[in-house]
Image (cartoon, rainbow, N blue to C red; front, side):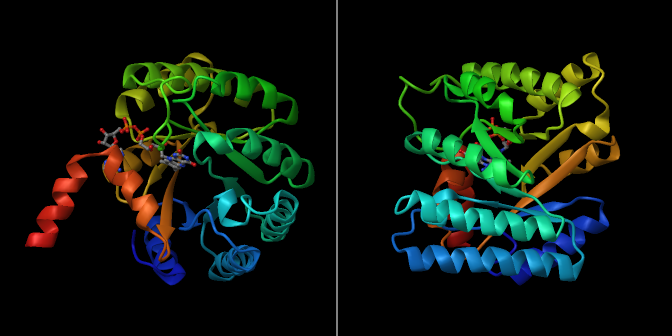
Length: 274
Ligand SMILES: Cc1cc2nc3c(=O)[nH]c(=O)nc-3n(C[C@H](O)[C@H](O)[C@H](O)COP(=O)(O)OP(=O)(O)OC[C@H]3O[C@@H](n4cnc5c(N)ncnc54)[C@H](O)[C@@H]3O)c2cc1C
């Protein structure tokens, strides 16, 4: 994270934009328990979109549905989301929906279906570690979905998620292939959210074999991870965006990042001691 405040994310974006790299902003927070908190989050995202427009920076936004009240009132959180997405539309911007743990998969997909009917400038994240995802994508195709494909960051049961990383990677590639075929035929955005260099190389080869031009292929990475690869992708003409998180509610997000890369735990401990 460049810092806890929106202004930190804005300043970091100016540096990225100078390198022809747009960003995606997400304000940390999830599973809020009061609709008043959800309303505050909604207002924050609308203010954020206006700031992005006024600062003339290249940035999209991404949010978690449980941050805008999904655990409390589905209809109200959908209303809040539609307000954010229509503010984004008037600022010529785009809103991504993060995918949370598997207890939210059905409801998030249902939510996205409804949101996409009202605002086309929206997309949803799907997770390759879930065995259901291939079907979820097939079922969504009738609405020309905009998809950000990731491996998945939550601790899931082996009955529903591939426990072996090789199977997750294989499934990622299989779904990536389906998405690449869609990019060619439909008006959709398909984004590959990964730092896995082998996977990226394989997606590049698949895209070339399918005659998908570099400028149609989009990758998203997290702030601070694989910066050299980020530059390489941009220099090769691919679209590349960097997801910047900010905010004070960083604890659950931070623990997921540590779990992904155990070496990070040692890095943090070393920095605490020195
Ligand atoms: C833009 C974006 C949006 C995301 N949105 C969601 C979402 O909505 N829902 C969800 O469940 N998950 C989300 N994720 C997280 C994702 O599911 C993975 O947990 C995460 O991206 C790590 O997987 P990987 O594809 O990079 O592959 P991995 O095989 O995990 O990592 C490949 C290599 O990348 C580097 N790397 C990966 N993670 C880290 C790290 N934390 N610190 C340092 N180096 C690292 C390492 O070198 C590692 O070997 C998102 C990820 C990105 C990039």
